[in-house]
Structure formats: C-alpha cells, structure tokens
Length: 235
Image 1: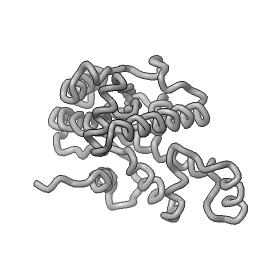
Image 2 (image 1 turned 90 degrees about the vertical axis):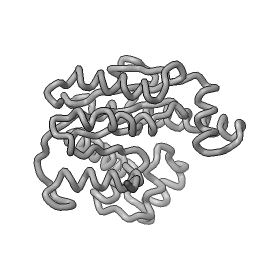
Image 3 (image 1 turned 120 degrees about the horizontal axis):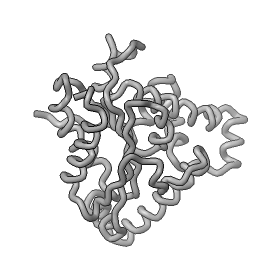
Image 4 (image 1 turned 30 degrees about the vertical axis):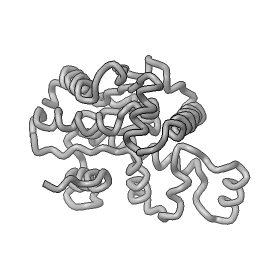
C-alpha cells in the first residue's frame, strides 16, 4: 500500500469530514489530541503511531484521522483563500518588526495578527471536528475549552533529542544542537507572545511524557490508552 505524504493524509481527513471537498457541515466529533513538544522529542513519529493504535479501536474503524503539523499552514491558506506567497509569514517565527510594518503598508500580505487569528480559527475548527492530532502552534491552549481535547507534552534529555534530530535530518551534532536551540527559543517566544503562557508549565497538559525514558512505541501506546480511558464514548 502506498504511504501517503502528511499533507495528502490531512487532505483526505478534511475531505472525509465533508459531503464534498470544501463543504461546511456538522461533524461527528471524535477525540482531539494536541502534542506540545521539545524539539527532537519525536512528536511526528509518535503521532503516526497514536493513529495506528486508536483507529482500529474507534467505534467506526474506517474513520479517517488527521495529523496537522507543518501542513497546518497549508490548511489555513486553503481555508481562508490566502495567497501562497504569504506562507512564509505564518510560521512560529515572526519577521523583523520594520519589515512587517512596511509589508503591511504596501499590501504585501495581510496584517500578521489577521494571519494568526485565521490559524487559531482553523486549529479550533479541526479540534471541534475531532479524530485529529495537532502538533504545536499553541493548539493545547486554543482548544482548552473543548470537551473532546486531550493535551500532551513531550520532553526528553538534550542528548536524546540531539540524536533524534541527527537521525531525522542526517546532519552533524553541531547542526542538531543549533537547530534545537533555535527551535526552542522560537517556540517559547511564540507561546509567550500570543498566549502569555509558558509551554513548559505542566498544568497545561493532561499528560507529560519523557520520550528519553520511554520508546516511541510505548509513548504512543500510553497516550492512546489514556485517550480511550478519558473518552470511552468514542471507542
């Protein structure tokens, strides 16, 4: 069987929740799992394995699950008919303030607050649909009011995360260290500036897992079991 790319899986998920692609209808809600993570803690692999565990246990095993990480930006652009050239402005790291002001004055892209608002709107809608895993972007804070949401924080010792980044990106140890440092600063700043929260606060999560002590497989199984226990009506 051909393994679909992340964005293709996300598109299939969205299409399966509508009468036809792009439709706006009411959904049969399922669990919404948010994964906040330290850089290199293995969130992408864990998300895939969670779906493998949960899908067969769902009331309807044919239910499609969606995983939204970097592809979330593409989903926002699609939802709100925004031009592809503004995609670079919608990550967790903002461009310099002067560039923002000049770009907004001369109409290069919509105000960044508008873009972040639309991202937040999309995350909340995805969480409301359910049967979805959303990685990063403050999704645990955005969906905190949803009764179907389950929030997880993934952490790991630095050396473990360095090795994970090296294995995934096939880079040197120094490159992996630099990547992790940059990502950690960027993510912490994003959460602080937009939500006035500290991503490391354990009170923001149902579960915190150290993936340095527990394997990817075990982590996914622990999270899946916790979700089934928390939301037995979905399984």
